[in-house]
Length: 155
Image (tube, rainbow, N blue to C red):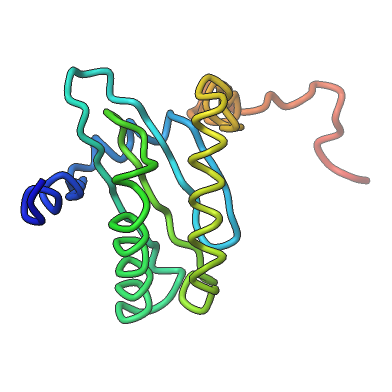
């Protein structure tokens, strides 16, 4: 295989659509000190892996956020072509320590997460995935009722 063909096989498509990020949020989740990894098998016939990166404004200014995303792209180029999940979306959510976190530890965290997924892809360490939130109901009819036996004024 020529180096150009080998490089083409190593390219990972980048996610840009919000709907892809939301869909991946229902998938498998791994939390490390420097990032959160979401993996969502697409279920289509394409064996290509895709990656997406997101860092909130709470993390820092644009310079900090872009540096974190550059580090994630370097991780993806280095690890996902060989150890990534075929036909899945990989989302990296940056945490504020990702800028000064040791590169070899971040690399090891990603390898460990992918290894864990390969062992048991059906295990979902996602705590929020299947639960419904009863408190989200809002409106006038859902307001707490006032008790009749409560005094209206103090004498």
